[in-house]
Image (cartoon, rainbow over the protein chains, first blue to last red):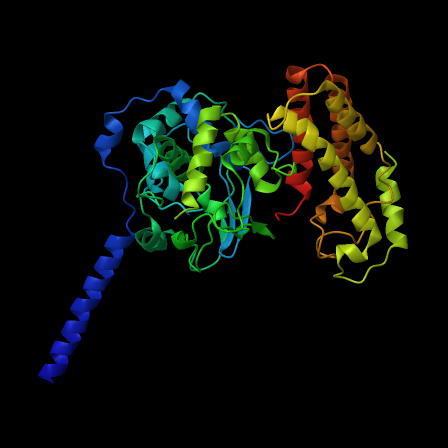
Amino acid sequence: MKRLGYLVLGLGVAGVAGVALGWYITQPMGLPATVSERLTGDAQSGERIFLAGGCASCHMGSEDGADPKVLRGGAVFETQFGTFYAPNISPDPDHGIGGWTQAEFMNAVMRGVSPQGQHYYPAFPYTSYAKADPQDIADLYAYMMTLPADATPSRAHDLGFPFNIRRSLGVWKALYMDRDFVVTGEMTTQETQGRYLAEALAHCAECHTPRDVLGGMDTAQWLQGAPNPSGSGRIPPIAGDDFTWTAFDISAYLETGFTPSFDVAGGSMAKVIANLGQLDKTELDAIAAYILRAGQR
Amino acid sequence: MAFSKIIGSAALVVALAAPALAQDNPTVAARQGQFKLYGHNIAVLGGMAQGRMDYDAAMAQTAADNLFHLTRHDQSRLWPEGTDSSSIMETRAKAEIWENLDDFTAKFVALQEASVALQAAAGNGLDALRPAVGAVGASCGACHEAYREES
């Protein structure tokens, strides 16, 4: 009997420890408060981050002719986990992010944690933005607060069990959230600049890299093409043997939307180019240099 | 525009076993050929705009004239119902085209208008050509964004 008692006690202790560990792992962890405290955002610099980060691609209205500066939410992602609706992130105090502090904004963008302390779903590409320079995100906050407010209510995601339990995303983050750059090693200054733009801001890999069953990116196949995460068809490879564009081709495509064979970007890439194409040509050249460097991994 | 009505009635004529290959369907092959010819001319105009080749006023004008005429080709027999990507394997034309024919037609008209402006600008130097080519590209992109499948 005594032995059984110890067993029960042992299991109980292990169970409690397990639950405590699980609770610890799944708790949303934001940035240290000091990160935001020492930063002042510059709205003018933030516009470039806004364009590079492609915020408008998902958060502008989805109808034709929608203003890319009115971020009232629009994109719909039908995935294997359920349907995600990009929320209103205009500065409206009730339906957008107008009531957020800079620290709350930085937590959301760089750690995927809401002001209420909940995990966001990684349809919001904070796993990429986590690599950003905090100053850039402070600048982005300053810029986005200058955009027009819109009172369109955000639509709740439509997800089945267990994906509707936000706490479980703590495990997902522990598995997949990695703030280190994927492409490493010897790199030119231009490639390094391009890596920052592509990996931390433009988040190319979020669509161009295949994902595993839990939705984590398979970094071994970085940028090598993937099934469309929302809808049919495939997102083409931009690395690997099937990708044969030159740096000129990539940069010209991002600037004008014309492929080397003079097809015109469509699908989700059309909006990416609408934003990214406004960057300086030197920045597009840097992204092109990075893409080619990533293909050499 | 009568365009959408004609597409509707064409649907009565066309009955296709799905899925079929595009090359088995002369209508879809013709439709794709039309877009290849757009691209054949935009390669000259866009090539100059992107700096892949030197600007040549006569060449640019010819390509822009071609594009103008190509975009005047009557579309009424090119888009029968049952020729979307869920019915035919080798097309990327989304079924949404036939659910939004007015909008699809409006986007085609936008291409026609952009090609008029390009025809007027193409021979007037590279600085005139570039924005006009950009506008044509934007009209292509607007339709691809809404109505073409990812590759």
